Structures are given as C-alpha cells and as structure tokens.
Length: 303
Image (cartoon, rainbow, N blue to C red):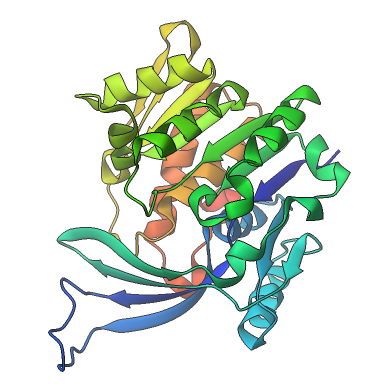
C-alpha cells in the first residue's frame, strides 16, 4: 500500500514582492525580490511532507522542456518520488504577487498541468492510505474523473483529502454543485475562507464549515490564514485553532502546507484537535521561512 498519494498540479512559480498594484501601462516598477520556486498545490504538499519524513507519491505532469526537467530534479533532490510525474507539453508557470496590505494574487499559464491523465495512475495509487487531490480546477482530467478516484480510494480503506482551490471562472452554480457532489467520498474537505464562503453563501465561517460538513459527513476544515483554522466534524464537533504570531515572509503555498500537516498528523494518529493545530503551526512556520529553506523538519514545527 502507498502510504500517501498526491494528485495535483506541478508548476514553476515566479514570486514578486512587494507588489501592491501592477505598474501602469508603459511604466516599470522596482520590487524587493523576484524568486523562482517549484510550486503548484501538489508539489508544495509533497515537498513539505518530504521535509517531515514522508515520501508521498506525487502524480502530476510537467513540460517536456528545460523548466520541466528542473522541476523534476528539484523534487527528486528533496526526496519526493517522481515516478508518477508525466512529461508532456510545456511547463506551467504561475506569477504570484504579494504585498503586506493585501492578499496574494496570481497569473497562471497552466501548460502541462492540463496534460495530466488519470490513466497514468498506477493501481497502487488507489490503494493509498491517504490520498490528497488538489489543483482541481486547473486539471481538466479531474473534472469528471475525481469522483471515481475518491470512491475507489475510500472503497479500499483509504482516507481522502480534497482541496479544489479557487475556481478561475468565478464559481458559477454548476461548479459549486460539481464540488458538492464529490463530498460524500471525501474524508477531509479543506478550503480557504473565501472559497468556503462563496461555495455556501453562508453568513459566517462557522455556518459555511457546518454546511459543507453536513454535505460530506466527514470533516470540513476552513483555512483562515493568520486567523488560524476552523474544523467541523461529525456529531456537531467543532475545533477552532488560532494561528501563532509569526513574522510573515511569504504566504504563497500556506494552504498546501496546511494540507501536508493534516496528512502527517493523520499518519501519526493525532486526535483531530491536535491534527488541526499541528497543520496550522506547520503552515505558519512555512510562511515565516525564506524560499531557500521553506519546509521545516518535524522537530522545527513549534507544536
């Protein structure tokens, strides 16, 4: 049995900071830093788990180009198994802009992310003890195909974690219902606050978490950035965890690190309150570290 499997996007990130607004047409703007990183929801979770001592099998796609080879080499050097990473098309690139006074924003050219095919999944992937599905709206194969994967993993005794990310089309009613229809086969549904609120139309975060949990029957965790996380579970259980105070350097990938924390905590058999607290502290640790040393080892997470 595969201990942990991850189906998700793998791309190159160009992170520019601080960028409060884009420069006017025909002008230039100097920023403090522009950095390159191996990114994508699937890659970040896999890299984070590798630092925590878990070799998660990563299933995705990179381009048949120089950038794609760099991504695969970086993943392998970090201890991430890459046998499940296909090579097709042109590597996807995301340009992320950050500033202290606003949330992150992204420009994404998905490229090879759209070349992922569910047929490349080996049978052992469906026997994973823990399976994370992420980057849902960026990977066409998952729209219509994710339900079968989630059902099969659950049928074979595994747990599933779904994080769709933001819908680039603005969450039309059909997309909301599409995701809600997946929830009966999801053990843990982990969305950020904006996603949970727009999906449910709820008036409060607590109402949104409970509405999603009732649809799934499992756990729903709403990731709230600097405000921590709120988890709703069966039997009206609720877990609220505050985020520790840290000096934030880069918030890109915080939610993906949180997902990795939940997976590691579940493997360790932690109670749900401790699992949500560990994931919150892990994400907070990641955003306070520089790009060259982003992912902490288990003993470096103050938990």
